[in-house]
Amino acid sequence: MEKLTTNKTVLDWIEDKIALVKPDNIVWIDGSAEQIEALRAEAVSTGEMIKLNEDLLPDCYLHRTAVNDVARVEARTFICAPTKEEAGPTNNWMDPAEAYKMLYDIARDSYKGRTMYIIPYSMGPVGSKFSKIGIELTDSIYVVLNMAIMTRTGTAVLEALGDSNDWVRGLHCKCQIDEEKRYICQFPQDNTIISVNSGYGGNVLLGKKCFALRIASYQGKQEGWQAEHMLILGLQRPDGKIRYICAAFPSACGKTNLAMLIPPEGYYKKGYRVWCVGDDISWIRKGADGRLYAINPENGFFGVAPGTNEKSNPNALASTRQGTIFTNVAHNLDNNTVWWEGLDKNPPEHAMDWTGKPWNGKTSDVKGAHPNSRFTAPAKNCPCISSEFENPDGVPISAFVFGGRRAKLAPLVYQSRDWNHGVFVGSIVASETTAAAAGAVGVVRRDPMAMLPFCGYNMGDYWQHWIDIGKTLDPDKAPKMFNVNWFRKDADGNFLWPGFGDNLRVLDWIIDRCEGTADAEETAIGFVPRKEDINLEGLEGVVSDEQLAEILSVDNALWKEEAAGIEEFYAKFDRLPPTLKAELEDLKARVAE
Ligand code: OXD
Ligand code: MN
Image (cartoon, rainbow, N blue to C red):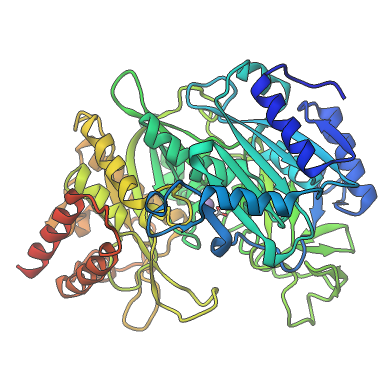
């Protein structure tokens, strides 16, 4: 097949990898609809994908991964920086020379009898100053078809690259899907990713976590920008103006739901809207006007299916009704559609579960869909996709929001005193484990800026990068920083806050604070709304004044314990920025008062 570029750096690298893995065939992905259609047909003919009901789910497919290969594998994910110190205390590290040798030994000859697909892709709109290019080699049609949804692929990307050497190398080899030899390795200094023995999304769609967070966070540190695990939403208020918020949450905190929030009825009638720019990743840079701007480098949503329904997230559900690939959900044989736990109260009787075994949703006591089953849906399907989604200059950010799941500690919302205090607030993000995951419930897992598994270098240096970015910003133009907690519980263990659409009430206060139009009370941890600052209209009988007061309360004794936990966590970091140490001392002094 004709090569799609004359870029020597690209061609030499591909030649080298061909010699290593020895494919039978080579296919360049040109991004055309015809090619995608032909690959879908081929995947259906081999059984790799199942074509779903064309009337009910046009252009949609179902794929099942191996049962041992259903999630990202943090224990087998490595940052292969020259020294362990550069990877830092929160990453697995492997010496680059040893890692290359081991990975090449695993990959050698692994494409024999298979086809190599060469995917040129752009993270971000092709040609935007924010965007970065990657090339992924893969032996999986499933990967090609997912990358064609999640990124911009094809000839236009290679044209934008020209002769440049500024692109990220990605080699994916399914091999035998052997768990013992599964490795997801990032080489930030070489702009290189190698992933072997997996076929599951987060491990093999190399543009996503591997590039857009791990490699890009390192690139951002070198080049003066930021790659963050943050959704981007635009909040439109009755005055018609839209202000943008970037928000970071650890898994299982409802990030996709917040990104696509539907305002409570009363707010909707007044003209409130939420527009989704992105649900997972933000790339952030300073604009000519001195403000920070963000793009979503992705082109689709790789969302968790279970729990997604007409009530929890109608926008996400609508996004999956066309051109979507479903992975590890149940297959409804009555109408050739898909089903998952929490979709509706009507599980199919004649179905296959996610492993491909016959399954009766009415009588079976095992789950039909894997808890981490996914949809890969085009962003353009989303009914609330922002008109700025393709804007190559990004959107101006008014606020950074961090959050986690804390039953007792953090109030519904608080604002940091300034940028550096905000970096501190982000660095102490933590979430309590839920019954959904194995292990003890209620255990606090620290997940700074929700980047724990995604920061491509030493977390101490990453925090310093946040502080350094702040130094370049005029405080009047810098985004304000907040922390939210939708998960506060009362003494009986009941959630105090309804969450979902009602979270808009909190976003509204956040934007008021950014505009300087809302009051707050200063507490030991930052600025907290007074009871009267959160509008409870329409929540009568759901949240009482007393409950609101409880969710907004700050218990200094609990924060004293928290400060001790933070101190213990910080002790792991040789490269802890002195600014954060000072912020911790300040918190200790304030809670002791
Ligand atoms: C994701 C994750 O899949 O953060 O987005 O785990
Ligand atoms: Mn994520």
